[in-house]
Amino acid sequence: MRYYDRMKERPEIPIYAFIKRELKNQIESGDLAEGARVPSEFELARQYGVSRNPTRQALRDLEIEGYLVRTPGRGSFVAPKAQRQKLFNVNGWQAVAIACPELEFHYTRTVIQGFIQRAAEESYLAMVYFIRFSGESEFQFLADMRNSGIQGMAFWLQHSSGRVLDLLRKFQRAGFPFVLLDRYVRDLESDFVVTDNEEAAYRLTCALLERGHRDIGLATSALDNTSAEDRLAGHKRALAEAGIRFTKELMGIFDTDDEPNSAVVHRIMAHRRHPTAFLCNNDGIAATLLDELNTLGFAVPGDVEVATVDDNELAAALDIPLITASQQAYEMGRTSANILIQRIADATAPPQQRFLKAVLNPVDFARTIS
Figure 1 (cartoon, rainbow, N blue to C red):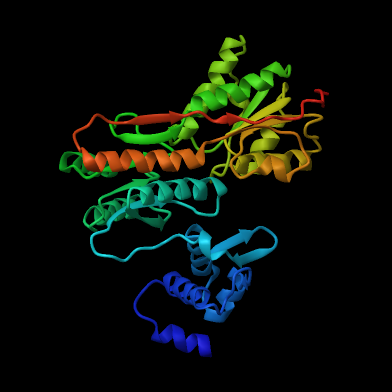
Figure 2 (cartoon, rainbow, N blue to C red):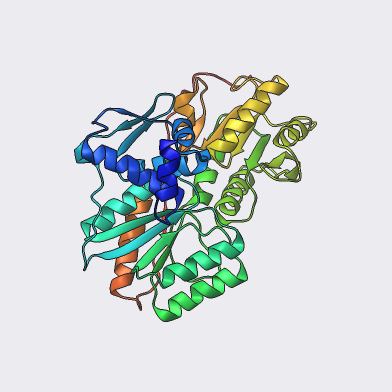
């Protein structure tokens, strides 16, 4: 009852912000000492009588700001005081923003950390927004941010609809600085920082080819953004150079409403020349693929080898040799902040468009193809 009464009396702020403020006050007052365990998402949800979504976001925000250290399987703990992000509420400080669709991924958090630290070096306050948009809500969010008083922003563009692109072109004409992160728009001459996804997929496919594979499947997300499109292009380029025809029947699009992931993998592995290897668009898809292959009785890497863009350290968590490439997340964050600050200083400068090389990781090649 005590928590319910406090919730009723809270100011008109989002629930997650209220819970975040309560936890931060406990940390800063010493009620939660350094190293102390913080209640879990479930425990906080029960205490405050809410769902787990706001408690999850409150804990993620505190982790980004350096108040918490979160360890999978163990929980959240109060970080050392020196690690905490310094938040400023002083007139005269200029603010920039970064917006992303999710914070649960190591990759996204690392991009944000790089952005925050580079912005702080230039005396900019960085505001972080965690929002997954519909097309209309993204348009409204961007329009609101334009009038919020921030100097500029970096963001993942989630819906490149005509209306949103028209808004971004208006930003450019008005001199409002923005930088696209992780993906870009082909017909929009804007600042962006992305991974060289075509090159990453090309190198991963080449690594599989060097292992002797000729029937290589592709497990991808929906081909509705430049990240997925460029990785498909890199895969096709490597196959073409090896004199191998790209077989559409060996490509599966995961996480769609049209076909369950299990059916996608079953269909591909039922092909008369089923893959002996797969290139995966990302490690989330790779994890799903591994589960489905195991269900169908295929051993990895004995029957099928897997290559993937791995930003959440899937390979390190599994006792399975995977060929992996990691994006330069921290550098992406720093570079985007740097470009944004330069754009704030000179709105008329030519666009800066950066393709960062993914890092191909060492792998134990001792196991041979069956």
